[in-house]
Length: 87
Image 1 (cartoon, helix red, strand yellow):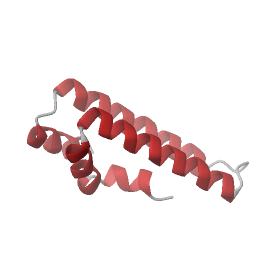
Image 2 (cartoon, helix red, strand yellow):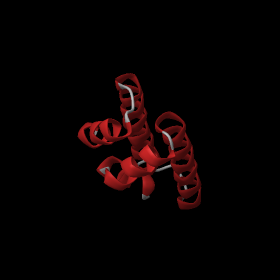
Image 3 (spheres, helix red, strand yellow):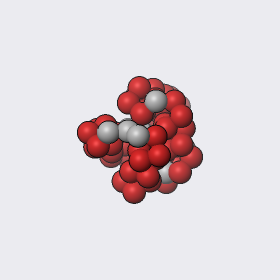
Image 4 (cartoon, helix red, strand yellow):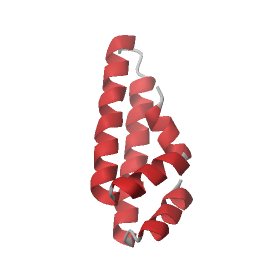
C-alpha cells in the first residue's frame, strides 16, 4: 500500500517523487498480474513464465528506484508485493 511505501521511504530517505513513481509502478504491475492471472487463453505454463518475468522486472525496478535495502524493506512490509510475488 501507499502507507507501507511511504513508511519505508521515510526510513530510507527516499524522495517523494520516487515514492510516487514506485507507487505507480506497483499499481501498474498489479494490473498486469491480474490480467495474466485472469486470461483464459494462457496456458498454466505460459502464465507462470509471464508472472515470473513480471516479478523479476518489478524487483529490478524497485531496487533501481529505492536501493537494495529500501526495496527489501518494502517487499517485506507490503501486501501489494505479496500479490506480485505469488501466482
